[in-house]
Image (cartoon, rainbow, N blue to C red; front, side, top):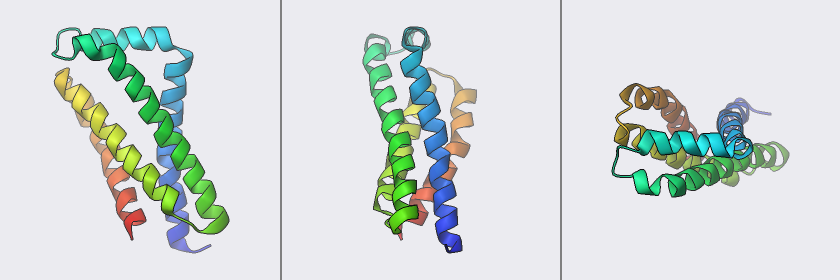
Length: 130
């Protein structure tokens, strides 16, 4: 296994861990998480859409995490990085949605906390693009 494959595998494990944990937590604790999202957006233009946004976020997180996990397995077994690329695109989209939500809710510290995750995801996207 070459050094670049090791880096790609480790980069893929990052969104796999983050998004599978977050998505599964939202599924297993759906009521309290949905209430929290509703409270975050209650004084914003998105207040009436908070429930829909919650569902979309759960889907994005699970899709990102599952694609990252499957992409790592596929890369390890066959050397095919195509699913890894999809996982990194989904990860970037998911994080941008989270960032936008934090900014709309005026949680600027929370938004700033997402930036390091975005940097890693953009790096991963770059690695899988070539």
